[in-house]
Amino acid sequence: MAQTAVLSGPDFAAGVALASIPADGVLLGHVGETPVLLALVDGTPHAVSASCSHYGAPLGEGLRVGDEIRCPWHHACFDLRNGRAVHAPAFAPLACWQVEVRAGMAYVRAASSPAPEAATVAAVAPRKVVIVGGGAAGYACARRLRERGFGGSIALLSEDRAPPVDRPNLSKDYLAGNAPAEWIPLQAPAEYAAQDIALHLGCTVTALDPATRQVRCADGAVFDYDALLLATGAAPVRLPGFDAPNAFTLRSLADADALLAALDGARTLALVGAGFIGLEAAGALRSRGLEVHVIAPEALPLAGLLGEALAANLLARQRAQGIVFHLGCKTEGFDGRTLRLSDGSTLAVDAVLLGVGVKPRTALAQAAGLAVEDGIRVDAGLRTSAPGVYAAGDVARYPHADGWARVEHWVHAQRQGQAVADAMLGDPVAYAVPPFFWTHQAGIELRYVGHGRGWDNLALDGDPAAGDCLVRYYRGGQLVAAAAIGRDRALLELEATLAGAP
Image (tube, rainbow, N blue to C red):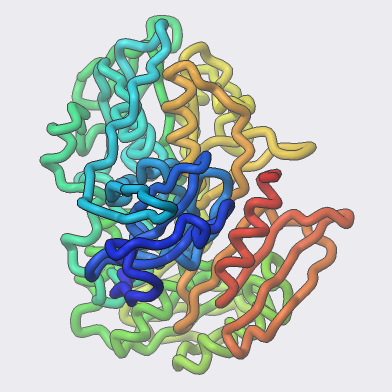
């Protein structure tokens, strides 16, 4: 998804007038062949790369909020003063340049390294941190701890055999064959040792004892902790009657590889369920030339979340790819060759991919006596009912508005993991960041921000068929969410509104 930078604007090396830099925005230009942003922060000019360090999005099309620049594609946030990645999904900082001011002109000179983040660890900080789960939240927590100067031990315990991966890519470019395997890890295995993060793969945690502050693993290993993050995530739902070896779920890199191996030489795939990830997978596998069938009980998939106009356009786009939909229909079983449907028909398929949702993995927390209700219940600071124990990501059920929420989005999990790291180091905040996700559907990018479930009114601006629209969702007259195709800047502005930015 990386984009080749297109140079525009002034040559900052030749100098620009300070007066031409927007006081509350950014000026896009370049230094040599590199696009650069120039911004005034407290009256002082700063120069940072104009390409997001996540997937290379053009930050000149993003939004400045305070001293941050926000990415138009995946809403990563960077500090304009020093290029630091403030919020996921980006972790690497932006490149920085020295700026010389002379006679009302700003000249961008040699590149400089971003200053390391000052250690702001609280006087009373944990010495031993244990993180259970190698997904988005667990990885983000470990990275943030080290970025902030935490000098204690970090043990990252993951059941997966592979190091933490870029899971959103699995149902998109990886399944389509457009993303090589080396793109998928969030970082190289050697970097964990360099960051002094003890990564334990294939590690199943079997017990948590809040009284002794220990976790026990299936191999007999015991880890003591001062602070613990439960980032156990969620497990795919397996339907009864789908035990054949060619019935798959998609959650991990191993799942994706097993599915692709089974499809070598295959002609037909059935996908059960029509959620975002399932439909991404359907499109990716259709691009490989497979005949793809989607079975779903809804008359119009995703209408309850997106509204009829946007959902109908997505369905039309997917059908135009050649994906065959069996709507208002359920499955009754699969014997490895034939899929039986509730309308009495059958499909001869080479494999089935189940995309019928996930369930939060709460067994460890429940056995330890933690409060559990459709996830691990946490307070506004993401603390569980046990002292020193936090939860984040798909498994965490946290206070939201006048109720509770549990969100299954990648960026949301990463940001909760970062918030837990901050809390462990003495900077707890009430977590109120609007959830955000993006999806690749039939050649378009749909981005969504907010808690939209239960909306009772919407306003559509633009035309989904033209790939240019913005939808605002309201509940009780209050804006609760928004979705956009081709309106990235407007969606960033609505995200800032939902977050209460001035």
